[in-house]
Amino acid sequence: MKRIVVLAASLVPFLASAAVPEDTPEGVQRFRSLYKELVETNTTLSAGSCTLAAERMAARLKAAGLPDSDLHLFATPEHPKEGGLVAIFPGKDPAARAILLMAHIDVVEAKREDWTRDPFTLIEENGNFYARGASDDKAEASIWVDLLIRFKAEKYQPRRTLKVALTCGEETAGAFNGAEWLTQNRRDLIDAEFALNEGASGELDAAGNRVSHDIQAGEKFPQNYQLEVTNPGGHSSRPVRDNAIYRLAAALTRISNYEFPTEFTDGSRGYFAGMAKIQATKGETEIANAMNSFLKDPTDAKSIALVAARDPSWNATMRTTCVATLLDGGHATNALPQRARANINCRIFPGVSAETVQAKLQELIADPAVSVSMHETRGPTSPPPPLTPAILGPIEKLTAEFWPGVPVLPILQAGATDGEFTNAAGIPTYGVEPVFVGPDLGHIHGLNEYIRVRSLLEGREFLYRLVKTYAERK
Image (cartoon, rainbow, N blue to C red):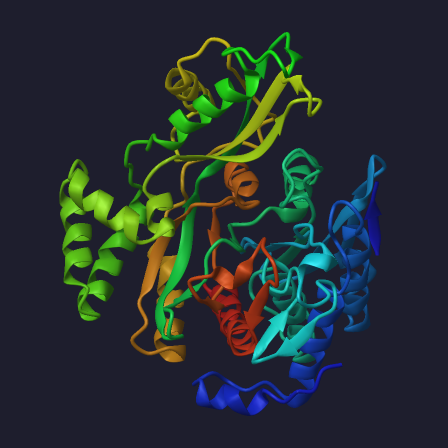
């Protein structure tokens, strides 16, 4: 391999009832084993190793018959545990541009004492897989690796070359980011006509019914700001009005009371247009009418407020959002605070600059004693990629086959993915992960993260067929 510095297959029968093609029991068992190995490889920044996870996936690909020349492990001397893998599956038409299949293999921190189950042991229970990374993003990473193994076993050679990029650093701002490194240092390895990535899913309602199959076309931009107040302090027995913690608290209250203006992209307009039809079908006429109203008149504040209050995800796709996430103040229990700080995490709407948001925060605070500084910017910004018929058509066709009656909706991702780096590098990147999740999003980033076993296996079959469709396209 090139370097650059057992669970039972018990769920095969249900696949047929879900109107998806069956893999062999051996194939499902192989996937489950691969998924288990990747999930149980700790890849947190504090104690894990993405490099080890990448090596284990490369070993599986090599065992399946991919040559060393097509397996590119990478890491830097400064970040030896934050490496990744690019695997190349050559196509037969050298004139056809490649397809990039992306996934990050690092995960958010997880403390065993806080979880019901060991976060780094994959546990199947109640029809779900529980573990840190069970969903975000080792589900899709496992699907991509398994996809190449499956194609190799079939002796299938696609028309277009397929490239799988497993990278580290997506979950931690300021850490080494493998996707960014590849765009800057080995663009040749990942060059492609377009990329498929995380960033969207299928929506389930609270009763477990499928609502929509969402496709990401564009994402908001994450930016952290630090609020800081300093003060001479003094003895706590002699309190004064000029208190650093109080001034910071007042600043945070002003920010919490502000809502940024509503904005729309083509993707978010398409989402609300489709969701209005869904809500009308469910009898939620007030919400449906409100969505249709603000699509016609983006200044309809009453309709916007109604929809935003109903679902925080809906609100997040309509505007820039800023929220306090960290607090640090004072130095002793018996002293007036000499310093108080807070972190404000903003998710910025496409086309709005980080400097504009910083200026707005300073304006809202209206206190020269509270400084607002910008932390390191995570990465570049770029406009949303176009959802063309060539991209959307195959997804709509397969969705109708797998889940009849479930609409495909474009979305603007309120979070952030490594697609920001590939989009900015000129590789249009779409969030396509047909794994259905409920209103709690499977507790990603939180306690007891989980994914429905059925949804994971359905998503695997969907992406298997989708990539084949794209790979043969003229």
